[in-house]
Length: 442
Ligand code: SF4
Image (tube, rainbow, N blue to C red; front, side, top):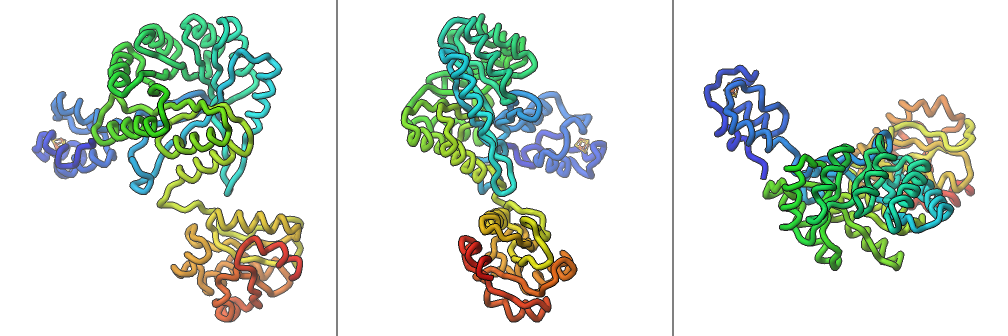
């Protein structure tokens, strides 16, 4: 558990000499508790206290990087059990297992599909993260498959093999790609630790239960392999969630460093619907990486959407820049639709305007990311605010007509908005789905 400011104060010299730049030792302690200042700013701290305080400055779940460049995946560094306490920081990596038993053309077909799994939703890019190559035949075929995959994707890679020699050959091929090595067990950990150290690669550690896993991570750290991802044995869904929850809880609440690593889950369901459901469960609680087989768009897009929702900051609604957006080949006669700058609202309206094929302007008013009714209730979407935005966006100069379309849910403000803006107010549909027919009849 993190030390409080007072716990930290008890470890300091308490002389208030000010050499750290703070007026008192207590003020300095409070800043350390907030992780806003380095412990070594105090020259008089004892070596024992320094070790304790530096350990407390480390994140309870270690940050692990897989891959490099723009496609690198960072997982870990989490600080809360529940999203509403702060936020979840590093989205769970989603990856796919490809076995080297497949022919070259089958592997290429899969890669082509995986490389196409890129989407945009509410202004954000949604992408998958990893490809795991699994050895099922000899080392030579494994290396061939690794090269084939590496040449055709920039995603992070996972090397799945029990053979240290085959892994070494594959690691030579991927020298600059920082792949994740899968996996060290109680029987092979010395050789796997050596490979992880030599190639500066992160390593998955596998054990049946949490006690064995904790013992193994300590041994691997002693051997110099500290960038770890942890995995327990295949279990029922509920037992696996129990493992993942306990690992997170022990790291966060009990400061258990030996389990303070992101986790990995392999999903081995043959039914794609069951696979999607299981993957969704682990994305929610608390997998750092999931590896699965299914690469169909319907399955992956739903998981990416779920992940996007879980890993947004609950304190900050997704927002777009408040401004006048021209949609399609607009002219000075195009209609102007008013909405808020909450991303989900804006992109829903945008989708329907595009579907109508009628070029229009969307005026997105700054409501601090609130949706229409919430913003109206909070007086962030008031007639005055909308009129000010219309002036600021220069709507009068851009269109030759004097009409604004407002969402049907705020029809009540039409009279006041007409007075404030000098525009005629037309009440649009309540739901965005009604926009295409509304625009066609306007
Ligand atoms: S330098 Fe150390 S002893 Fe001096 S005020 Fe700061 S914390 Fe206290």
